[in-house]
Length: 239
Image (cartoon, rainbow, N blue to C red):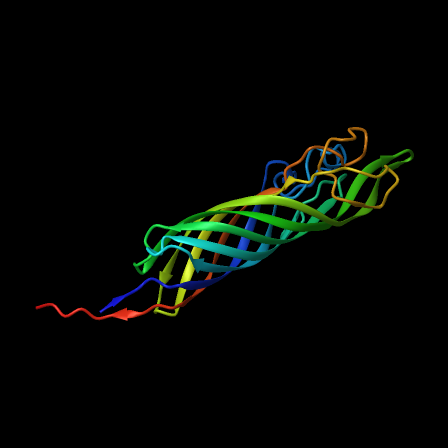
């Protein structure tokens, strides 16, 4: 009795996100307001998220798949415990809602352990909030709060992973992925007096607060359940 490869897959995963490149900036769980205000970093460290991916088989040998995904990421300076200095009382929180389309190559489609690698292009709405420490004459410091309005960006993701079939309908999955959500459409606009503004991730105005060419990039480690459809049994009689 041999099972065929599935024709359709749904993958549901929980995610742990780790900030990369300029998305980071909370070193050792300690936020630093100055590089965030100068536009050098976004000031986060890690976060949590979730994703749902639909996979449609497009090749007869079941190796090439067309993927459609939706995901949510909450990336922030302090995930569990805020470790603040005596002077810097700031923080940064970002929310990203992302939809993606891409292709995946499955190296072992007919086996219980299925290993895959893939890439996708994605579109995201990114928003968030900032609290920045600034020195004030006569006072040790002052905190200022800002709101990051929904900002549309285009990006990409690259990932590898695998699934293990518990039955012909259900399995578990593990994956790791690198994502850059703002590869295209970066911008920086407004004035220093704004308390609400769109994501400032370009260096079009170097004198504007929070403005600088920054990648909204992170690594994700995920695990969850996989649901298989279209698996058929083939019976062979050996003489």
